[in-house]
Image (cartoon, rainbow, N blue to C red; front, side, top):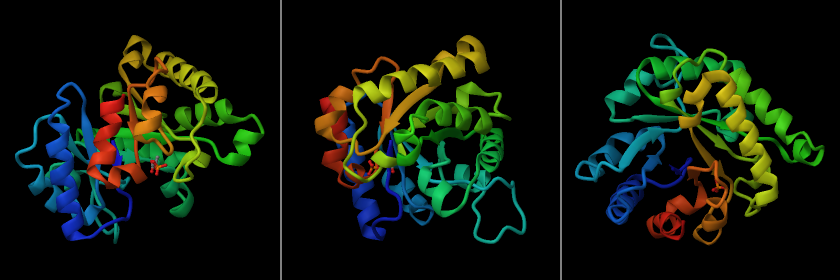
Length: 243
Ligand code: PEP
């Protein structure tokens, strides 16, 4: 999954989408999702018009309201109308810079899923919490609170992204990651029963082609959420190639 964040301009988005889709063709058993800025969605949808079915479109955020007087917000229905099938919820940058708490994220998931969007819930601890040995506790707590209203595990994916590994070049070690994914899996099984096993689990945080292989060696990991390396089609698709 490619999180383009607030990067690029109109010609950049179109080219990146086209190039990524072209290179992704080779990997038919792998799903690629692009999350461009809101204002790029229409152009990217056009660029993906002839893409294979393994390339899908998503948005970086969604309103917790359905419609109405909520200046600046973007509804789930607007996103599906622009061809989105996915949405990120609770990216650490939205939590930190837009002040989005878990309770609000729970509402976003509920509203987005009601419109059929697949929600990718992002969770992860800060450096301070990591150093205090609180990673598992924080992640499980975020998961429980954000999924308080969620009953549809078919429309859910979870991305574990240690905040201290996002955009920093630091990748969590396999020893850091393994126990956390085991806990996430167990929490999902506790909540959804055996269906919890089908929720896709992703790792995010400075993923690149040269560390992808190791990350995918963790049994529970089904995919990766990529920021920086997704801004170049070859670097992004090389992650799939190396994995
Ligand atoms: C992200 O934005 O979700 C992310 C993981 O970014 P980066 O790959 O740049 O660390």
